[in-house]
Every structure is written in C-alpha cells, then in structure tokens.
Image 1 (cartoon, rainbow, N blue to C red):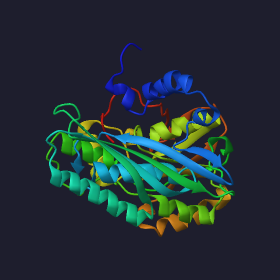
Image 2 (cartoon, rainbow, N blue to C red):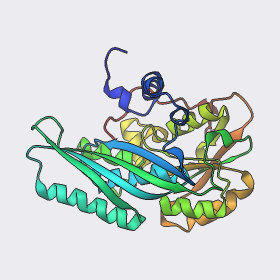
Image 3 (cartoon, rainbow, N blue to C red):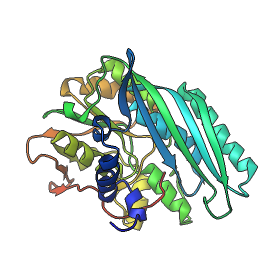
Length: 334
C-alpha cells in the first residue's frame, strides 16, 4: 500500500484492511480492536459510548438532507446502535474560503433542528477556514458521547446460532439519491435520502428486548459490509433471504439502470439488529409502529455452517456468497 486512494474510504475490504493494518496497529488497545460503531467505555460508575466521524459528502445538499443533518444523525446513530442513549455532540467545521454564508446557516440550522428532535446537545465545536480549492466547500467532523445502561450489552461476541436478523427498512435510499443527484441523471421519482436519527427507534427496541445481541447502521458498504463485519467478528455464518429484503421500487429501478446492487449501497437511516428468535416478533411489532421502522422486516438468521461467511438465498432458489465490498461503487457518500 503505497498511497491512499478513494477505495480506502468506501467501507469495504480496503477500508477494513487500512483500519486493521494501520490504525489498530499504532493505536493498539482492547476497545479499539472490537471495531464497534462507538467505543464502549467505563468512567467512574457510568458506562458510556464515545464515537467520532467525518463527513465529506458530495453534493453538500441533497434530497432528504444536507451534510450537517447527515453528520449529526450519523454520530447519533453510531451511539444508538451501540446501545447508548446519545447525550452530547461536538462539531468541527473545515470551510473553504468563499463558501456562502446562507448555505452554512442552512447546514448549521439543520443540525440544531435534528439535535433538538433527538434530545441531544451540541456542546463544543471548532471552525477552520482554508484557502479556496482546499476543502470542496465544507467538511464536518462530529464526535458524540452516550450513556449505556448496565443491562445493555451490544457486542458481536453475543451472536448465536438461531438468532434472527431484522432490518429496519428499505435499502439503498441514500446511496441512490446521492448517485442520481451527483451525476444529474434526471431520473424522476420519489427517491430521497433516508437520513434520520435512529435513537428513538433503538430505545423502543431495547425496551422490548434488552438482550439484543448486535446492532449496526448500514452506512458505507451497505448491508453487505455490515453483515460481513458481524460474521467475521462473531465467527458466525449468516444467511439472508432475497424475498424478505425491503427495497423500494424507485431504488430497484435505478439499480437496474445503473447496474448497482442495493445490498452494497449506503443508507443513513437504517439499522440491522441481531437478537434471539423469541424476541423477534415483539421487536418487529414495536419497530413497525415507529415511522423510522415502518418497513422493518426479518431478513435472515444466524445459521450453522462456514464461519465468517454471509450467504443470500435468491428468489429463484439459489445461493450466492455476499462478499465484503471491494473497490469503488460511489465515493464520498457520507
């Protein structure tokens, strides 16, 4: 690896290798090695989750959101799927000289609105302005802290044979939206990003089933990346069923036209949960009552077989391996 390329930011095999071979190697500690969406820590008598992320999405404004809403919701979601109640957020802005003030105000306003809706506070931040041509408009970094109750333990090591996999809604809405708007395809329809804070949905799920074994939000690399990461971390075999995976007609149409696979497309308001089968129907019921989970579905389970692998049972009755994404489908998706 002589140079960092766009491939290393795609959330697939190359990203995974970069994290393991560079960052974990030099930042080596037990918490980091768990490779969760947020680090679960203990400070004094409280268990917390702490996470950070940077956002470079292009275009900055898109149907369903903008870079500010995306940054705020993305950090909240990383905390929420770690079993934490998000509490505090920080926001750092790198702004290019000449960036319109009205656009910055719209971005910041959307972050404030989403924070209020999610019940979190943006308590610290930083602003840097760089020369024109060095930041492509604006980049945002957000960090977040959340509190984890003692009875919650979201960890891939808990995943067990027979567990059920629930997806909270339709796949590929964000990735499809960004692809169409970035490239000006002129495709008409109701396609828009699913960008949303999922902490209210997660709280309701945990109220029904505190024993949820694992959760992830399916962002870069989509559902395929998330399931491969879980299969590897838990040393489990995962089987999902094509007929049960919710995908909107609009996304199906765009994927057909552009040759994309919705399993690999980014989402910014969808989560995948793995839990004991006896809780699956009650969790699914409460999810469907929440607007953020109205299209939730049971899409598969943890099966006996080759450890660390993900399989898709196709509509026509075949089976194919779902690999970790490799290469570039769409860079700068978040």
